[in-house]
Image (cartoon, rainbow, N blue to C red):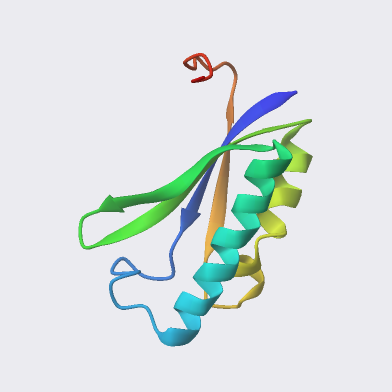
Length: 102
């Protein structure tokens, strides 16, 4: 298994603060998609990162290889929405994480 950092680039620097109704509905489907991947175990952590006047998204995933990370990114409904989002996929050769909280 391998780890990858996925950075979701928004269609403009001010997103989501100026998101349209259609864009925000697509973002809801995006969040549901990543929630399912978290429950399935491939997504370790997912969420928005606020920067400047907008935000971008991030996910750390554990999958077989870069091709599998690309499949996860391509399967995100926000990519299919046609609103101009795109993923950068970066390998993480190792990670340090805290033990599970019980």
